[in-house]
Length: 221
Image (tube, rainbow, N blue to C red; front, top):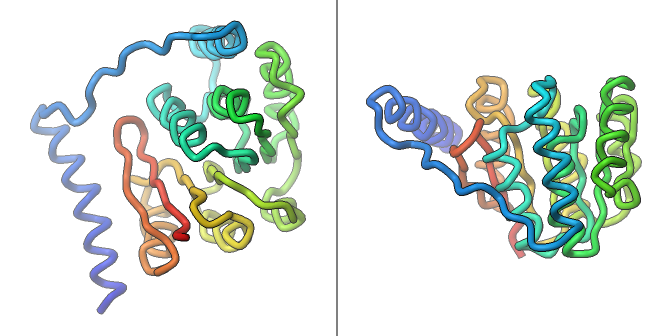
């Protein structure tokens, strides 16, 4: 019964969002452009804009989602962020905007060596290579090697693998830490990951739908 209720709640949330868009309601409000308040921030924002304007693929997240990643990471004072799915480093740079302020670092996992190489170059251009570790290879195997505490996890890789990433990383997430999952309107994420976090009493989850759909899950204290 509880599993059915969870499934219905997830589907209703996604359906309401879809209907609001079809009816022309302002489901997504325009965001003001980001403004730099330091040379460090300006350099990172410049690198992000260069990536966006170049029309390159594999940006991972739209700017709206990237900005939310930055806001949440800085708000919790994160010292260690783990990202599953580096791609070319676009989402990672949003994390770095926060981590430069908190004195933290990013560990990011990417399956494709070519994209990982592009990401490293983008991190270098943005001047954040000193706080980023890019791990190349199968993330399912590599995240299991992590031992140190994590403040924020961002999952944006193979959708069927979200539950496995959650199970492997949740023990490392500190109480009060966040687990963020992207593309929550995709069926594989709804039927697997969203059901998993919803039934766990240790977790509290809300949805952010300004961009491509992000679930924000708190590990309770």
